[in-house]
Image (cartoon, rainbow, N blue to C red):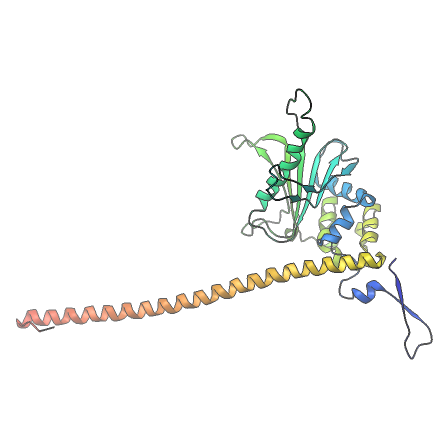
Length: 318
């Protein structure tokens, strides 16, 4: 539990106890935001909460026999060429069957996000060869690599659909059959999920709801009252954090909000610029129309003068 402060008022003889979470996070709600770095790592990135990550992955991944166990591995990866930038995964795991899993939380749109996801999977692919290169022979057999991407934006804004999960594999474009089944990209688009609590039936729907709505909830809904979500809600409760955790979350929450504020201001600036340019274009277009009208009137006047000259057999000096 969070450290407790004692507040004494002039009109009260008794002592009122107020948790740090109530003092610092009056506007933060009851539960942490899982889309913040702190929230995501607290729920999914610790050994103590490994069962939450396993349940989440089993809900979305169709792995034979399900994931029974996994190990967290190093999230920092050095490129083969040392001058190239390092890569930092949000989560990097290996399952009991040696599947390699990368789990990423992307909050804002990124122009080449799919390219980034592809580059990320190249690291666990390369490592598999490097770890057995001391063997005399290697038949190039690889363990599956799965990239799970939780994105808080629509990958394609122009696409009108409520489909919020996408599973991508290498495919033969003629037969539409999977060509290679050991490389999988999973995209979970949170803004496309709009189901209410009483509409939740599957574990997939429950996890999507929690990821999108957790920080807005005041209590654990009946629909989510199983052992996994009970544990998750306890871990996510702000009142259960100590002072150090509260400070870390406060910084993470500020960074999260600032990030969206910067994105909002950027979009606002672009919109204002586009509006200004449109207004200038409109003025230029209006001027062009006026000039075109004047030119047309001038040409008509010259034509009338020419006709008068022809009829009267005279030639005016001009």
